[in-house]
Image (cartoon, rainbow, N blue to C red; front, side):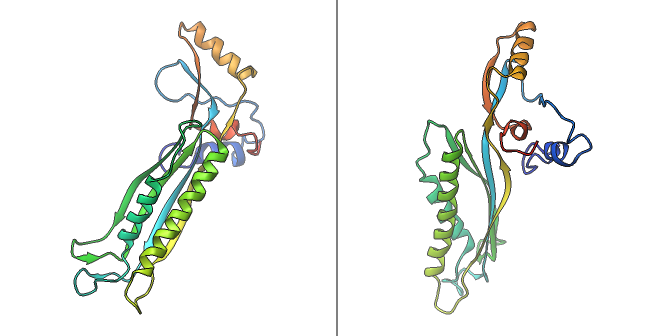
Length: 209
């Protein structure tokens, strides 16, 4: 439970750290996805954020000049979209959800967005993460700078709502060899893969065992 969406691997976390079996698990196998050919021995690291901007809101005409949370989010998204994500190691980002506002002629009081950052390399993920947080902060600052004098600034809140560690189980590890041989025994052609699954936690070398 909790592998998809905002679950942040809560089922695997509980099993491996707080459940009654947490100190008695010697090996972990996750059956996930379609087909039987792919063997995921490399965990794809990711970080997920919820960004919230709050202001006083107002009328689009009479209160024009009030700091607008949606405008600030748009600035942050534009900055993120400009990030030169490398193809190798593969790195990706996505703004998956945006909410805010109540009417076409009302300046919103609040706006939020959910963002997913991923990379095949831990250092690249840290670089993307730093760029993203700076982009959000600068976008909020720019919107506040442009507001009418005397009007309150936007309040920015950035929450980390998901973190999946990366790592690798070597191709010659007993568990990987076993999976490879089992796949061949079923008549399929196995291949090693990198993905984000419940196995991220046990694959991660620094995750508490």
